[in-house]
Image (cartoon, rainbow, N blue to C red):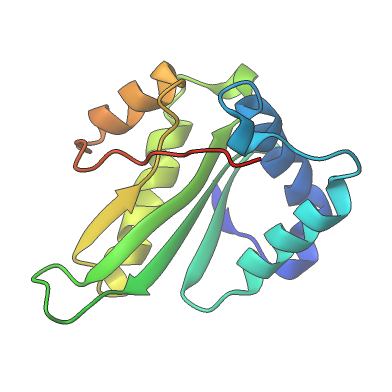
Length: 154
């Protein structure tokens, strides 16, 4: 079952989101959390839940939250043909529940929400060091358009 998360759900939702943050730590320094990171990260997630034109969807299985997707509608520049961007900000499925169709179900729900809001395309970013995620998103019809690059400054 897919449910919409609310600010009141923050304590139940945060461990799932934190699992995603911890999973990416080894991918690149840009994903690494500082010591004592829980309070500011929890505040960031709460801000996202409250944001206008943002939807946090959660997959619930037997009373447990096992997956989450955050989708956002952003207005682009009217001079472009595609200017109502749907954006998938984060997606996580608990390891024990992967490859059961939960990611697809969450994406389908996010896609419907974005289309209902008027999105004309959907974008996302995937760590190049996460081959499972790359395969999943490619199987959903996503193709590379640009390459996001990072240079860490001292």
